[in-house]
Image (spheres, one colour):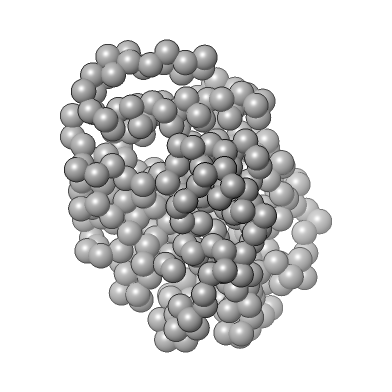
Length: 321
């Protein structure tokens, strides 16, 4: 099992994200996972730097820790040829430490280039074509592709690593899980859903299972819950809402009824290590073996100290089902 640390690019500026990544390596995390957004979820989060630039800087400032995008959409805002090139470059400058996490995207980030946001069935078709293009370019040589939605004309990625990065595919429904099994190397999920992982295995998927465990460390439950409510209440809207709302103001409107008690129920809020282990264990019991600790508390350094001094040994003792 590996333990990762979530770098929330919507909540912190690029220099702070780099600093946290360096600190996470010192704290003993196996990898860091960074979101890839154009907009933050909420206006008060206040940030949304360019993930690929920041990950390159993290690669230069670290030596051991793995790097993962969590997740990139390679269909609308980015053409998959650009992601194939970016991922290959990052794999090279990180000496093979990079994993490409991909998903079919959210309107929040994809509509900004003026191409709209297609219906879900079309997004899945585009997503499949995008992964086929990325895989094709990583084979080397000049390549072309003619898909229903995406095209590639006489393109070659000249700087390729000896081994291509692994691809972790986000999936919550049957179509995405099939794509993960057929074209990915791992599954990326947000819920402790054992059935989801089972469907991935049944479809032929043999890779790791990534999942984000919602935590909020603070010296007391109240301040942890307040911080989580302020910056992470968007996560309680559910995927069908999260994928469709176009701007942070819409997430503000959609979350007006979320309360601190809701955050306490969803997140491990406060300093109690038993509660944090309980939340992480939900994911290992479901079979996930790449657990990303997503801290929504007000003090990143306090959480990293807590992990290094108390939590790490406890979660590393858990065994995925």
